[in-house]
Amino acid sequence: DAMAGGEETALLQESLGTLDSSLVKAQDGSFCIVSGEFETSQEAEEMLEKLEKEGLEPGLLHVASGMSDEAPVGNAAGDTSALPEATMPSSIQVYGTVTEINGNQVMLENDNQNDPYSSIVLNINEDTLILTATDCVPKELKDLKVGETLYAYVSPMMTRSLPPISNAELVICQVPEDMAAPTYATITEITSMNDGTPAYVTDRDIIYFIGENTVIKTLDGKKELTAADLTPGTKVLAWYQIMTMSIPAQTTPDEIRVLP
Image (tube, rainbow, N blue to C red; front, side):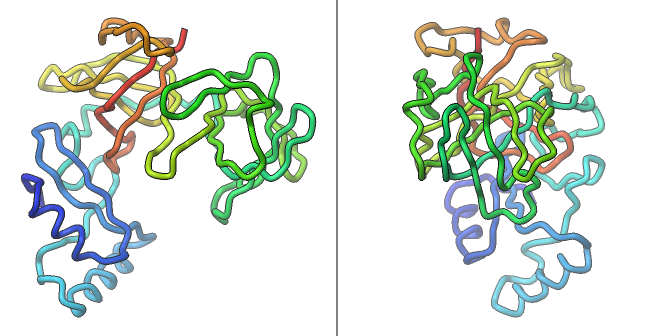
């Protein structure tokens, strides 16, 4: 159920131990805790029963669906039925550790067995944009190192080889361990929620809401922008901490950088 946040929310999340959990913030400022993801509701009920046997207060948590028409309390916009469908992205997000650099090709690997691109080769060409994760400082291929973690956005057109090879549009490097890399997306539509709140639909299956604390800047961070600069077709990098489980997902970014 929705909570005010603060110590109550922190203590509840801490009581879940090592179980994966995420805070979801509603538009009204309240919070709920989303815990776990399961193939069936039966599996979720069994996990909840196990937690309560281990000491969790009965009735404190409940099983909720992540479907857009059954979203848990704490959804960022409340009424997901008003949300438009997101557009398919023009690029695919991949990530991993650099295991080899050969000429203009960078090999990425990760340990996620469910990731269809757990191994992929990036073609770095003259059009590839390489940026640092914290402040978008431009880098070059020679700055990438074996052993570092990269996030990249690649063309859906790739070879059928194993691993596949694809042209990289954007590479994000120097990602600190204590922060998430920014998300690269294109704004495809600007619409309004039932209460009039502008919703910025992107091709990344994410909808952005601009909060009073959202900072909008040019890519180099030297010029402040406004929401009026976010128009359909604009490519952006967005940093955020929490996101709803609805489809499409929703978030209020902390910062947005607008690509030229």
